[in-house]
Length: 504
Ligand SMILES: [Zn+2]
Image (cartoon, rainbow, N blue to C red; front, side, top):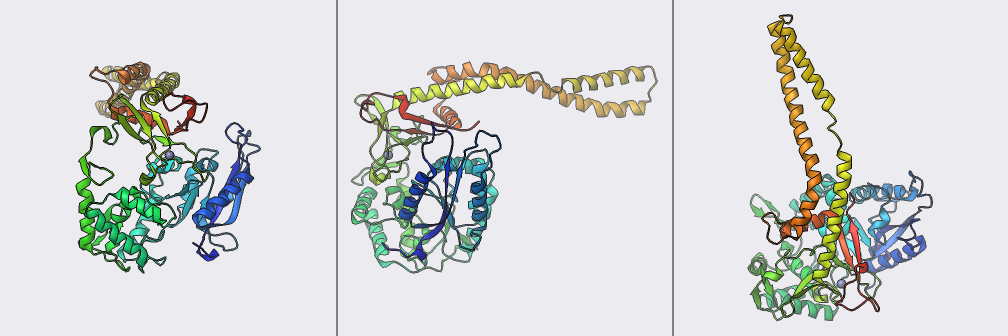
């Protein structure tokens, strides 16, 4: 595919070299070279570069000039000479952060308007997506920070367009030309054929293999996977309807018909949806047979699914990063976390024993909880409002004594009682809660350890609760491949795990 400069998305890039040598051997120049490659691969054009060198990071208030400058550019969507800027490229998320709040400000600036792109060396990440879980660090920030308002604003903008029947504006949709309204006959034919075949029993994986072999790519230039194929086919855009956040946009109870040419009829699309609905909770084998999903394959029946990611380096130098799935060998009783094969969107090149991984991560989580409990115990100290409560109680006692000696009128006494008693009651309740919390912080941890490993106690933690603790501790855990000398697939080496802790 050849593209003129005009077709390329104008972006800025950002690089940062930190003084933390252990973590960071990449100079600004290395990062910029990598960004250049990313831009080339993704159809972007770098129109301005920003870079900071944290030489003085030892000082508390190091000021990152270029970072701040870049935020201004992203917010405005143009350089000072008027050149449009539609996004930003970095080598990895962690380039963007030195202090708490940097991520948030970055996301806020870049999502200031819709249609912006953000990419690291692994590819585009959709900062407007609801599926923040798949976005690693940045997704965690988005879900944590309260830019719900930003995204709500964006969503409203999309909705306003949708209700006018305008095509969605982000990326070109597969099946249409770049204008979003004219059909691309070649791609449309592929879509119609895939739907026919799928409904008559061909498997998604087999269609995807065919598309991969033919060199058919997604509009963003990636190989199709069963996941992206499914998502594309389930989008009612195919029949001229709009969907936002999984719901068809309707006005007065009728789907809004778009201004673009539909590829299939609404009836056909509803058949596709019914087809996928019927498969929910089922497992589809490679030859297209549908079986009920085995309990072992139910989502979240393992401790670490969703957190473990593949750390294998792909031929293009980027990291695979896909979430690992579980396969259970019934003969040996050993289960493994593995990276799915290429038709499923993985690299198919990584597998690690599940029991050892879970044991190690469980200990890491418990150690973290112990550490937190210790610092909480130190912090908790005596209840800080004790003095206030005593003073109010003394006032009330004094008032009673005066009233008993008839030195205070009934009216004044009862008015004061009415004021003091609720305040005292409120403070007492607060003290009780405080003391309870302080006792809990001391007992909780040994209790959690017992409940974590217990298989019989009534109060043992179930998988969902343990998963919640794991997610509370880690943004992600990257499993790096065992190279030569690191042992075979059957041994376990914790050094090959990269734990990405959530900040406290
Ligand atoms: Zn992989």
